[in-house]
Image (cartoon, rainbow, N blue to C red; front, side, top):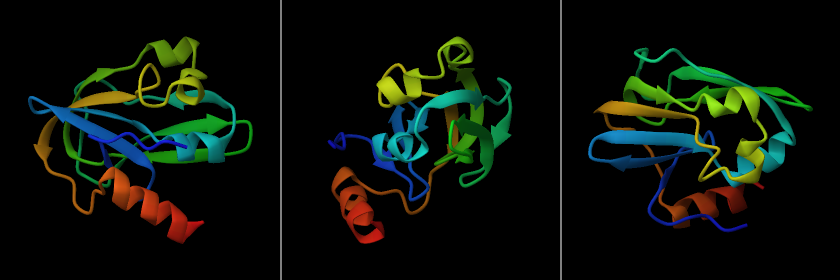
Length: 126
């Protein structure tokens, strides 16, 4: 499993990429593997605000329903509506087409990990 460089990772297995103050958020390859086949993603409303660590939605697979946590704080400026029709994108391309939300960042995330730190965290957790 490759863990992309240039992203930051939460211990709750979300990834975040911040560009020009806008954070794109998704779940990691590890998370989607643990979940199994994703069948539904509950997305927040555009304009909703969350603090870092808040639950912003849920992801449902054939095995379980899991909360999604905001790795940074801010306002949701875009949701990946394509996931309503193709939730399996989260499994097929978790770092690309399977992104979940974009937020205007107002609060940096705490305890976010680099790719190397996340890899080490997974080894320790596993």
